[in-house]
Length: 122
Image (cartoon, rainbow, N blue to C red; front, top):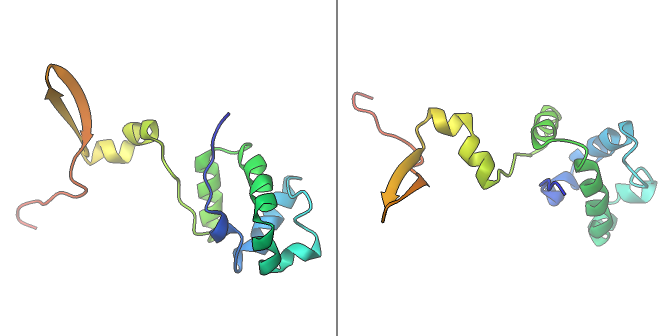
């Protein structure tokens, strides 16, 4: 089973809710979240387990990249929660020489380096 990560609180509050429900409905994945009762934020939080169930089912049909890209286009406060393999394969981290190859007791390991680099002359 693929795991997808969403911050349910951010997706279920404020102005993002109607847009999220429209997105779900456009893919026939909204279940009953289009019902009027779900417009009430307190009701949503009281029944968050159902909301999460619907969102989990929906996210299974998308890649993390698809969700993040479209969610950010809709101004949702979303970002990818990367797995360790995702981080190791990240072109951005490779380009920044983030990973250090370290040898310890005859074993080779890849460890994270510093989160930023200092350059002379800057």
